[in-house]
Amino acid sequence: MRIYRKLLVFFGKFKIKCKYTDWLVYFYTDSARKGGGQEMGKRFEGRTAFVTGGSRGIGKAIVKKFAEEGANVAFIDLNEEALSGTSAELNDSGFSIYSKMADVTDKEQVENAVRETVETFGSVDILVNNAGVIRDNLFFKMTDSDWQTVMDVHLKGSFIAARAVQKYMVERNYGRIINISSTSALGNRGQANYSAAKAGLQGFTKTLAIELGKYGITANSVAPGFIETEMTRETASRIGISFEELINVSLKQIPVGRSGKPEDIAHAAAFFADEQSSFVNGQVLYVSGGPKN
Ligand code: NAP
Image (cartoon, rainbow, N blue to C red):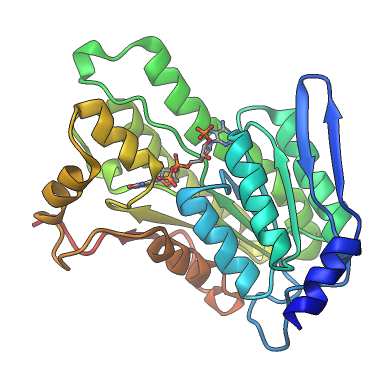
């Protein structure tokens, strides 16, 4: 079966389009059209998930989780290297994917990606607003640019993507919107910008839940604690300690005695995305190994 899928991918359509400054990677295989990577009885079979920042870290784990559980998966990212690596990896496994370089803060790029996703797979049923950046600094040193960049990527980006998918979701009377917040929403030293954005996302989530619920669309939020990704690795290097040291410091505050992995967040996102979670709406699920010790 696996070899058969690989052959499908190999002989399938494989397009790489390059347009001046807009470098886009577009993988669409015959296996995608035929639903390759899907097997009977998988809970997201026939569904299409759209994940922002889906090339690495938490986003990649979410993309893989949905693909493994039968969904067609579309993901966008700004990280070109991670995008092509993850696209090739998933394509090789025979999953149905669409991937594209796109900036969540750019309305046209996001709307085009969502439209192409619907053209490719027929619908967009699940959105995960995951793309994120940090620009940490103590409040008195924080620049206008540190503030604005974080607001734009997390808040404006989630707004643009949610608005882009909702019209397709409303048409089909079905949708699952999942916004990735953070325990930093409760306050975190050096993250005045990020904590405000992540708290803002929770309010955004609850309002979408109220407005879109009657169309069969739920909106929920996953708020991760410390998760081992490139983002936290960068934090370690910014404060001048090794990643292992940062993990050890964080462990002291985590009741379950281990740090989080991207798969922990993917599991929570899949719970909200499940068709059977239709009565779970406007919630924030902290996935952090417990309240801080
Ligand atoms: P990550 O490893 O840095 O991955 C984030 C991805 O988003 C990167 O590929 C990044 O591309 C992409 N991205 C950034 N800005 C974008 C934009 N404007 N448009 C499209 N893609 C963009 O981060 P992560 O740790 O997996 O975090 C994923 C989400 O979880 C974020 O929202 C983060 O705030 C949240 N979170 C993470 C943790 C944690 O401990 N890791 C905890 C709580 C919440 P570039 O590489 O080009 O920037």
